[in-house]
Length: 275
Image 1 (spheres, rainbow, N blue to C red):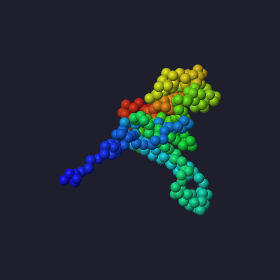
Image 2: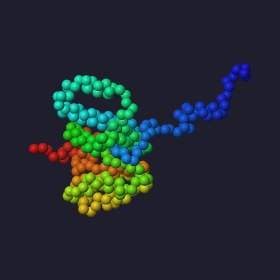
Image 3: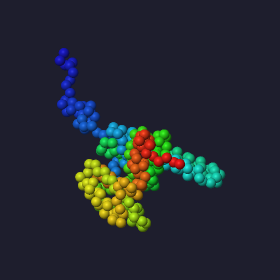
Image 4: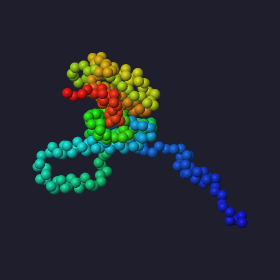
């Protein structure tokens, strides 16, 4: 009978159902991940990885950094005097407080997914120096490549400060970051500048190099190979970050953990042997 046939779906309901089947948004794919972006005044580490491994890399980086600070805290606790053991009540109270959820307690590291393949940013709490942490991690990896602690992380680029490119005055920004290294007394220092510019039309590599070199000043000579200080400038989309590394940057594979943990035979042969 005609009355018992299936009723046709209204056109508007059919369209809505079609959108839902496609995931909403008219069938447009939306990238999952942290919606929070990098803000001016942040500091932290840009982390690179193979394409498609961004989520695993971010999780691994946060775990690695967290383990690093937990390890240092254990060392500090071991240096305390035995008198702390007498205060049992205080220790129990501290343990109980640590078990309580606290909304006010901020996370020391926050992974931020970027709208670029192969690159993420890990925001650091201001109490943790990203340059020092990355340098120590790379020193450990160089000394003990057999103790592999990461699988997805490739290059880590710590930055001491981040600004928005639309509002930043590069000369002033660079002067603030580089003052402790070049304008606080002491002898001249050899330096090199290595900019990375991705998806940004305001700054070019040449502009960045010239501006930063003018800030450093002519009293400090440029040396691209035997530098005392390397200045990393990351211009990524709408943010710019500046950080510095020491003279062992090349020896530490430009802070590339993957290369430190899997040194080639040629690289191992080039390493000076201890007497």
